[in-house]
Length: 329
Image (cartoon, rainbow, N blue to C red; front, side, top):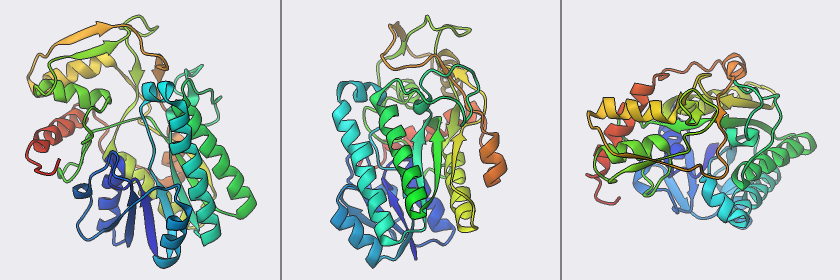
């Protein structure tokens, strides 16, 4: 029996693949390599280059590799891009996910873990936001993920597919052993951009909006280390295999930092006082999003180990330095 990881050559997916291999799992990666890298996964792991929406391919892989569980990361994830290209996001995130879920049901897959997002909450009425609060996405990205959540829940009821939906907050950092990290050129993640600027890969960076209703006027987010997020997935898989019921869970630490606080931390950790321009707001950015994550801790036994902003930034910085030495990047 094996675990199929879609988007397994990408940022979060590659971390997951390393963790699964370390735990003795048989792993198969499906990735179109649009934002992923073959070198990001262990050499012993089979990589199939293709689309999650290719039903013939996915059906064959499930049967031939005896796939018992799917961890679904493959998606487009940039909020501003989703506003300019909503149909592309609905195709890649929603339509392809529908095809993948159907293949899972037909192929007898027992467990399904879905990479969702805090963007489903939009601009929450209260902070921290819980899994039971209203879902009102502000962007096609958030809507595309919410649609997949709905499809997965309906498929679970109709076909008995057990699932865990994990709503990510702001994922950052890198593998402490520097085997993989955020490597996509032109990435828009704040910590990624900050450490690139600290290392001179960007001449400057921008703060989008300084007039939000927050203490310093900039957006507040709950930043979670990618290693802790991967632990949540591993715990979710163990939970489902032990007979746990389907669930939707937040993945965050329960406290947030503003954009300016993150930038100050990046300057302190790197020792570089880089240029920061303050510009207008971007469409689709809520003022403050912080997780209430008690449910994941209680249900999965999830115990974060990297809940420290300076550590997250330091790991991201170390990875950014290593990227320059990777010949195939």
